[in-house]
Length: 471
Image 1 (cartoon, rainbow, N blue to C red):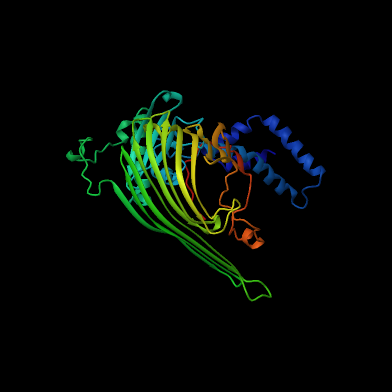
Image 2 (cartoon, rainbow, N blue to C red):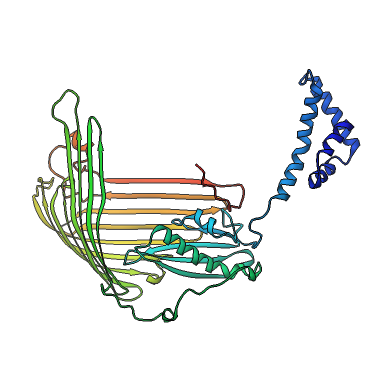
């Protein structure tokens, strides 16, 4: 036994030898362990023909394991020695790998509980097609009650790389105030990249387009060919948007066409489906103050699977937001009322024996949206009916919840419920199986329910500094 101990100990040096000697310092207890160990394995005949060598090797592995683990823990260098700051990045649309790869002077954790800083990032689309990010730095633990917000605007023409690089620079700026409190300030450098002309924040912006943005798009051209089936789907259109603090205007024509052809075995004529959905969406919205808005909405639609040859609608409305609109990236609670006129011309006679008709309806809705570091909640209720017949009505409720219940435990829940009594465009007569399977006609229904739920629990190491993109 002493020879085994000497052999093992002589093979170590430095911390590893110290760790081993600490483990085997009590020679008498170690001898008893060794004798019991050999007697046990001899009794079960585990080792034969040179069993002494294999027994010593197994004992070596058992003894060295805690020593190697201790040395591995002590010898791993901390690549973030310049700072003890731990950051939790809470952003649904960010390139998290890029942030960790480029900003290396902090530690990253996978849950807000052990974090010193909770970085909460949200964004809204701007009128010009860009994005306005809102970055909230929330201090925790030693930095409790230290919180501030930075804003960052990204141009619509920015590439994905330009967008993420710009966001990284704002993140660095926001972290600077915390980092210099826990590390040597001489390790960092602050640069001002502006010029004298940038110092006037209230300077007048000269825009030759007067805040109008135009976009022509072919959003989707898809083709799928098989020996017995052909599919083609196309979507294209045009946007004209004007967005300022006072006005929000849109004019958008769109064109959607879908074609499906399926061969039937033993028959010459295939099953064919042709669906189109073309139309125009438009609105003019005026800001009255921080809480009130007025709007007028107009649209045109032609859609064969909903039996609309033509449908025109003109609907004015008013909206009230309990919170100021400036806080919309974090929270909103709105009430909306609309009343409007519609004219409908149908491809086929409806179940109410109408080929065309004039309609007036009204709609009342309420919706809430809250984005906070603990999660996001969206929900709403909506009710509408036609004035010529109150029995022609619809009610809708929806909820979308994603919250962090506790460290590592998250819950997501979505549900939508509709009570439907206003399908005025349903064509009279029977609907064939082909029409149902190819979705060429709308089916009568009294309700529609959809729901989903997901629960996830993450545990283990708090740290998330390493980025590994292999395979």
